[in-house]
Each structure stands twice: as C-alpha cells, then as structure tokens.
Length: 69
Image 1 (cartoon, rainbow, N blue to C red):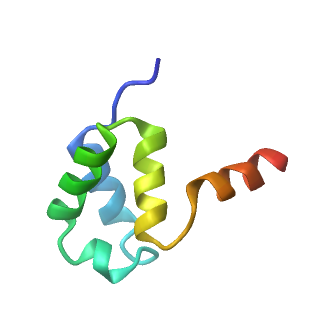
Image 2 (cartoon, helix red, strand yellow):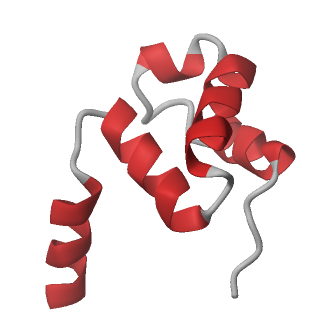
C-alpha cells in the first residue's frame, strides 16, 4: 500500500511546479492543498485526479493514454 501524501509534500510539489500550474491553483497554495487533501484523503491516485481536474484535464483519460505508451 502506498502512504497518503502529506500536506508538506504536496505544498513543496506545487511550489516547485508553480510555473506550469494554472494561476488559480497557485494563488493560494495552502488553501488549494487543503481542498485537494480533503477531497482525496491524501491517496496519491485521488490527489492526481484532483490536480488534473483543477488543471482542466481528465485523470482517467490521461492515465489510459500513459498506460498505452
């Protein structure tokens, strides 16, 4: 089993990816991280799905595409 992502790990990741993430996600990083973690319970796949949704992408479609590579 994969451990849930912590708040600090997600904050660090978002700060490092600030140049490629939509402004609405990075404007209030701490708030965005709280929302993502509440909705995903920190479960990595669910965290990714939340992030993709906030970026206007569909996690399931992208995951399928990656698995085909």
